[in-house]
Length: 155
Image 1 (cartoon, one colour):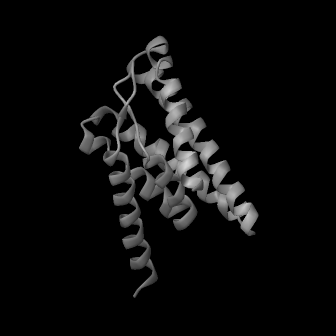
Image 2: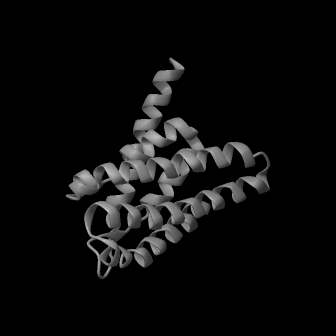
């Protein structure tokens, strides 16, 4: 099988897995219209398994915002989740050389997830959607979502 075709198929499978993980378990967050889900763990792992470039595509495309009815968030989530996969993949490539350092690299990918989810959504919501005060209300729930992604991806 052509190696490019294999990467495309694997990327599509990871995107589908991220979407299913995002939509399968949804815990609504109070005060926001969002929810906590295990999809972030898959987004982190797409960068680890596919590398930064293909991981960016799988992580970004795998967001379930379009299917979940969060149309305004589709481009925002594509970029944020894509960047999480990309940076997680870069960290893993640089640090994941030994058995012990692989765990450290995945943990650092989870930290990137927390920062980009909480910070990225806050920034985009504050600038483009709701203003500063309303956007600040989503930070705690986004941090919890990121921590969940970190824990699940380590397991």
